[in-house]
Image (cartoon, rainbow, N blue to C red; front, top):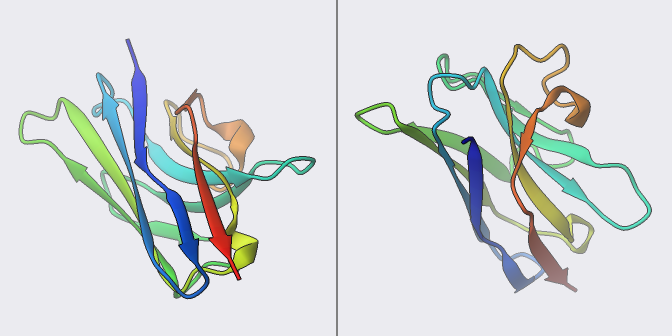
Length: 129
């Protein structure tokens, strides 16, 4: 069964750094894209960063370019992927619930939440001023 398990997150002061990690099991060979999304209450889920695992091409929201870095590690037996998001120079507006996601098919828009099939449980990131 496909599963995404997230870790990381927490609270930090503005200017600080946090890292998020997501292990995708039973999935490495099927994911055409993986990404991190975030959501605050009352707003739509927005794409933060995405990556095509087989190619390594990365995509970022304008609001996080130069501050966040997405990466993926594929296990030697190709049984799972580990998706990481390193977040530096954090701002209060980065506060949100962050979700790891994977797309079984080729997404039409790689930063659009609706194009992703599998989601992690979410992890809270809080940045205080």
